[in-house]
Length: 215
Image 1: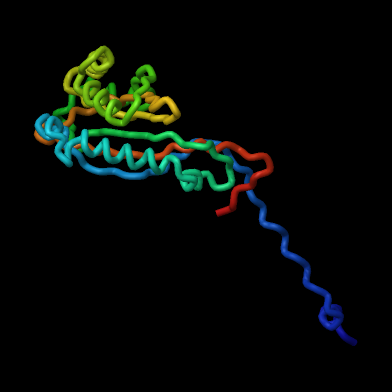
Image 2 (image 1 turned 90 degrees about the vertical axis):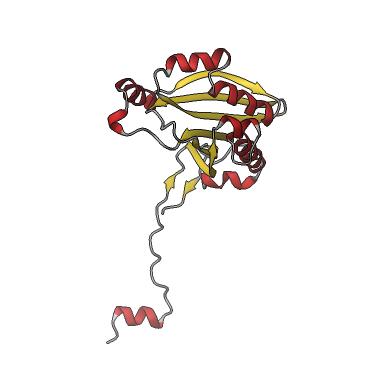
């Protein structure tokens, strides 16, 4: 007598389908997509002459490049199956590379570092017509010039070193810039080297019925 299995096979019955793989709902959030990072010099003579390695020159080039990429549909790929805005924001950061040894750091700088990691100093949003105008303001601000620059150095006092983050949204009227600063350990002033970086900040919003792929 044939078994049940052999009977099913001879009758051409298909094996039972495997249960579907369960996905997980798209979780809204913010994703930063790194674009570029380069070393640059904060040396006064380099920046006055707009040397290719100066912060002014490196920042101008990287900002123009990332603003062009900002318009690309590929920027939204970081959100997988979530819906994305028409245009992400740009995150531009500048930070010193070399710091004094721990034994030479002042307590006030270490305290400010811990505080501003959680809650950076924030400055009112500003608007600029071009990258050049933005770059000029950043140079003045970072050197303690103008009302906001003076306020920065009042709050980030002693020899503590600021680390800058500028969040840039572009529209038909120009560039809207929100500024946040982390005040931390003193940099080694024997070096003028800074790290300049750009990223695209994408808001991933939930799409009704969207299911993200299971890794």
